[in-house]
Length: 492
Image (cartoon, rainbow, N blue to C red; front, side, top):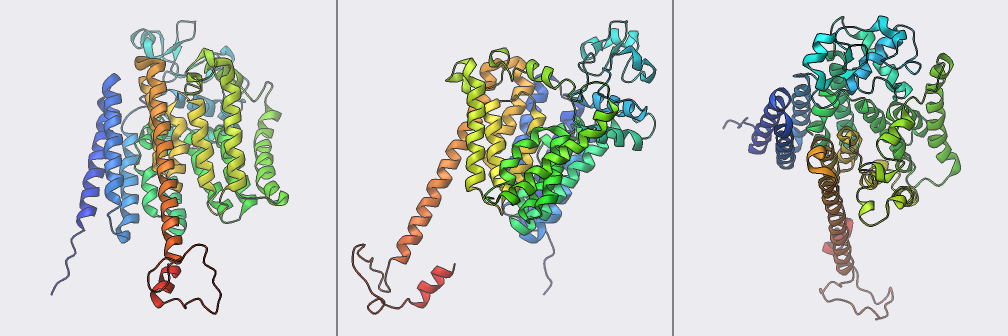
């Protein structure tokens, strides 16, 4: 009798869905424009959801190879086209070039004539190209233009990000243009997938890694647009994994590097301190992270003539974080509060959740609290850029609470469809995502409460199956000995 070596049906179904997902992403990045891009992106998310559901039925021995194969296929789709929905990577390439010339990226804006000798026809097209493609290029005032957004302001990116830009520039062949950053980001994205699998094989279900590895946001935002957020995600996942294994100083170093790559991972600190009460242990994480951030900034402080914070304050004003009435931030809070109260209310909400996570969190799974603080920050701040949610996606993969992916999808709606649907539509998207999180969380707690009540009820029954009277006195001498079946129930 021969053994059937054919893959199980769930493996075939999942493989088919992954093939469909990869094909849809290739078409999306190569051909879709405008509303067609948004529709195609939504379709890719639907196929991703179906593939993640199908993976649940895949036998465990097939899970890791399938997740890895899918990660490679999905991530590679981000390499098929130039950046489609963001021009941030052009600033990355410029900052790398400026540093390679021995100049601090914080001292000069791209439009500064002092750096005119570093310009080329790719990042700074000539007048003829500016006339043909003016809508996608920023004018410089001298008849030329640039692919770099906000060319009149200094860079906003922290020092670890700047170090990444310099490294990619140094390793990229001449004339590679955007491909160097895309390939580097693809390597980082795959490294996140591998790290998630390593953590989840010890402390969870490796199927959860697919929530990052197969998510359409990864090839679109992390690879095609080459956002540096993927570097911060890799460092953040590594930091939480180390803290969970009680390597708190090393975890603090990685957390500091993550903050110095994107700033956003600062919201992970309460999660990294989940359940930790000893001041010495808290300092091992928090002070190490702060010292690491300071040390990464130090070389740029010494080499720069101006502020190393760059356009950070101007960006906060531009995006409406300091004045809720000036933009689409705090959209959910502004439904019930005056605009002037939105920022204090957001800070109070984030602080309250952070305190609860620190006080009651699970030190063995710091990513659970980190997801709560990060997701809450997204719902209260309602950011308008979809790539910020890459960190949220990775935390969902670690923790397994899939309902938070809706918040990441709401960010994509805000960025891609915001100009069409307006503030009302963006508010509705974030409101729906927040509603799903609240309802799902309530249902999970209710189910857990019922399960706990059922287990308690089982333990109060005697060997005849009759429930004990709650007020009946009992003594060791009069209590019946547990039966074998009762003992097994307790052991499970």
